[in-house]
Image (cartoon, rainbow, N blue to C red; front, side):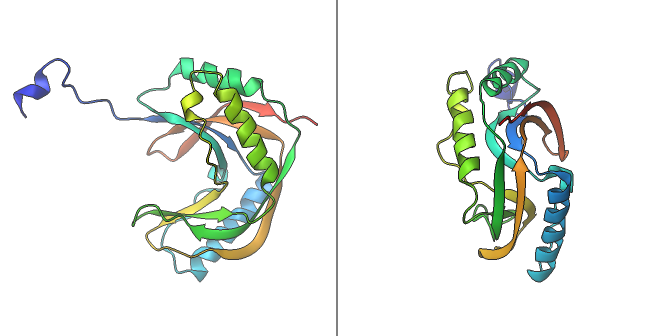
Length: 194
């Protein structure tokens, strides 16, 4: 190691271990349907990636960053923003599947929607407006591509129609993800009221 690595100010930044995000989860029946569809599409497309567990299927509304440790001040800010958002339950429908063209390896293979996602997009925008009023405002991104990740694979699959998967969103959740451990811990839930 070089001498500089021991000088003050040259310490390696701690590796992120914790991720925060807002999400909407499908109900148990819809998650089971998504799991069956993931297995079917995996076989049809000769994909090698292992499908996510049904309890991990979700729509990310806003990613709130990766941290070394769980920042309680940001959790409190996120909870405050979420509590200020009012919305009625809404329907979500995904009817397409495709690979995201991200990296050449380990590409997300996802459910997307050609329609049936307007209420979801409007809700995501409302939550983003609430985040902009807090220290988490920088995480409120204008672009939103609603999707549910099914699995990760090195192959790229072009978009295709699939049998629609629908559910009604009755709540949204602040999630603590333990990076590299495939574990999602719900920190708080907010019901959607008519």
